[in-house]
Length: 479
Image (cartoon, rainbow, N blue to C red; front, side, top):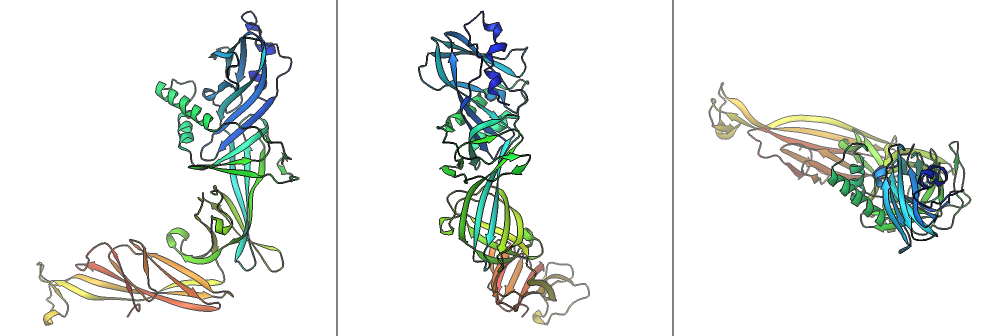
């Protein structure tokens, strides 16, 4: 439905105003000259700005706007005159009781004239999301990355030949507007909140100025949910604005209510990547997983914009020029320069096992006869009394991590283990601390080979405890 048919429907609804002013008795409604949709993905909010050329008569000209059966926020509706000093003046805006979901503007004109007007408002129900296709080459050295955006319109309004802009990132201004807009219409709002909302809305409208609409290109339509191919791909122009980016889709798009469109965002070939195997129980569960690692930067033939949230489908080319499906995962927002990590799950060609080999205790301390005197076993040929009790000891546990690499390529393995409490971690693998209680170590395993990675945990108990920290020691585990 073309909403402007209602708000410019003067030929029947405005007859009661004929006694008060010389009205424009329109036989046809002027078409939109331009319409722009600025769709945010951090909030369910879209800024709509549209222009029409209207013929005004000298005197008072009532204009009507209706938002029935749409998700338009009526408190955000604003009418402006595009040309300065046009001889037009907005007298008032009223919400008649007998016309629910309708408002009237009364515009004073000093002469018969045509003028460009602009109406802006916020609406909900229009959303966009990204999806990605990654295809690795057969040697898994590089991949081809394609990005698409899907625009869905469930706002209750049709938008024909609209310039579509997609906002990537979080905008504090928009978040505040969305929060204030949640207050139900019809209830008395706090006056300060109303003024704050109005001011924020105007700031957003001023930020998102409406440029001249580009020349139309062939659009991609969906009929009955079926996708049709475009004759030529759309270009999406990226523009960085401090904390967010705007994708402007080339040309114009018709986005009917209840329909969706899929548009290409970018395509990059020969994106370099590396492969890493990781054991991180907190992140991936109790399994060794395989990952593709790449970066959103210019060296990787990316890095022109941040990558918004979206579904990533990953394939690999095999030697017969067909594709092997690897995984589908949700890609979280990736800033420029940040890493992209694609988790392919467990690799059946790489077997990982964890075995507990030995448990022992030493460095025993005893409390003598219930007092405060503590003696170490073996110190000064001490004899244990029947009423003495163990007060402290070191508990040693030796683990073996067995990794068998049945693939035809060497692999790089990174292992992280959380070690809470006062613990000594001893290994030949030159461990490092990832954080204050997480140990990390890495190793290379040749193709068709195996590795036995031993480490030892020494946990201080009772009197032996000193402080809540992890101590690393490089050396033979279980020595």
